[in-house]
Image 1: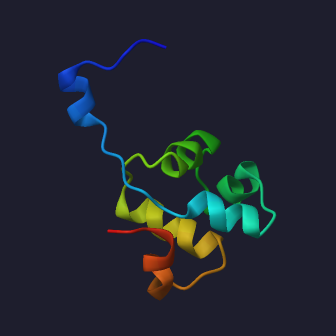
Image 2 (image 1 turned 90 degrees about the vertical axis):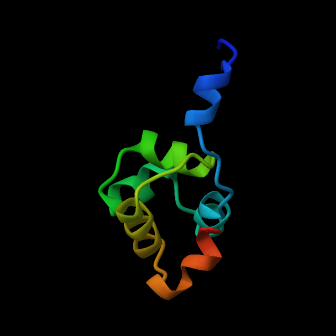
Length: 78
């Protein structure tokens, strides 16, 4: 893996979230969450690493974890 240069680093936004913690607490695999949310495993992996994602992706993940949209602050810190 090569180091990220200055301009590339600006494009990568890291947003801490609790997706992995909640998913593992439910004993759910990344593949299962991806299937339920109709997203790719790669997308789930990126979100768990804190990379930025669309609002619709966040909505799909929240609902697929069995939570209400009003619980978004428990999953994503915006």
